[in-house]
Length: 221
Image 1 (cartoon, helix red, strand yellow):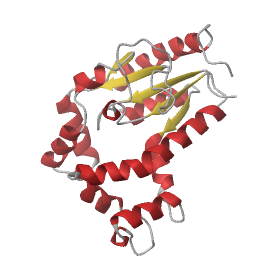
Image 2 (cartoon, one colour):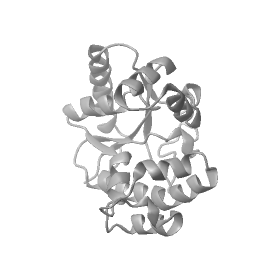
Image 3 (tube, rainbow, N blue to C red):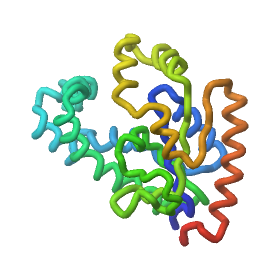
Image 4 (tube, rainbow, N blue to C red):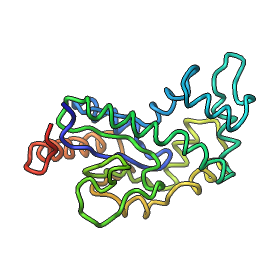
């Protein structure tokens, strides 16, 4: 059948994408998480894993033949050329699988969680054009940005992951800044308060998305 409205959900590290996704899922939305897809694509036996090993070396496998994601991240993080090679292997596969899941969804709208949506350069802000990511992108109808003050992001990541402040800041510096993300947004949730605030914002947007999915500009199933 396919969802009638595709919304790209994005935000920086520690912005609260997972919590927002959980709240939308609780209201019946289909959630398609590209990070989850990426992990599935590098499971043992997957063609993408073999291509990564051929490109970056077999020393990225652990004793069980699984990809050592931390080692791969360390190898490509500070090397733009290697990062581009990795993205060329994974991104088309991630996109194809995400679109397959969106086409199979039977809910009025679906959220495609794409952490690096602003970084891809595929979004053309300000066009007001439906499906503005084009045929080679995710063909999104709207973009929802989770906006969080930088210091809040650092606090959340430090509480969640065994990373130093310097490491967290390096990750933040490698991502789009807040203004870049906001420039592609149709909708914004400011996540600087408590869970009750998030729940209220999700309820508001859920109503809006249902109305849009039932409107004349929605996709034809």
